[in-house]
Image 1 (cartoon, rainbow over the protein chains, first blue to last red):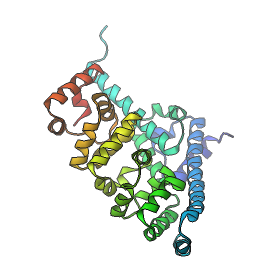
Image 2 (image 1 turned 90 degrees about the horizontal axis):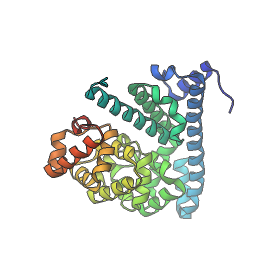
Image 3 (image 1 turned 180 degrees about the vertical axis):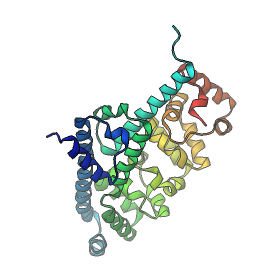
Length: 75
Length: 227
């Protein structure tokens, strides 16, 4: 995994968290900030992928009659 | 040479346990190894809590629109089918994300149809503050069984997060389900310390005496783990 610069890691974390970083976290080494940003990004991507896959699979377990109305609600 | 005063040593010891517990919680949230986040050990506890809080908001807020629509769609399906879908394909992480978005009575009805081990899996992933009403609706007997399952896995950090969200009867059931070691480990890391007199009232003088002795053996006083 390519390491981000310190500024890029801080920007990535703050953008993902929607907040300024707490002071103690801001003082971490660049490579640690970079790792934390990557861990959070990976968790977000994993969650999005899991939700997408589960949504698709769930439809196969639902009675045919209800699939249309469920699709209309979920979109 | 005398070391630092005992109270100062004890305070540092409980602080480092709190820091460790925060790192475990963040690692659970991010689904990564605790060791990977070892660099956070030097960060102050308040900053770690703020970081975890924001990461929780980020992950529980992500895809919230889709999760809300799924929760709305679930009203069309029987509770048994929802319970089955929760286990597969949704699994514990997504089930935990959706729990707080369901009508609480409906979520309790679904939880009643889920196996204890799966509920323990969901508990690890859940933010109890987002599902307080659901947790409060789960019968004490089931809370006792979920507690035993979590204790078996040594999930003290998870149990510690739930302390402040259990009703009286459920709390008594949970406390009774834990042996002294598991209870102390949970008390070390809980965010909601119980008052000592309340703990004494719930557990009785005899067990409190055992807990005092067990805490002493670990180099802390029970008073430090209560409020």
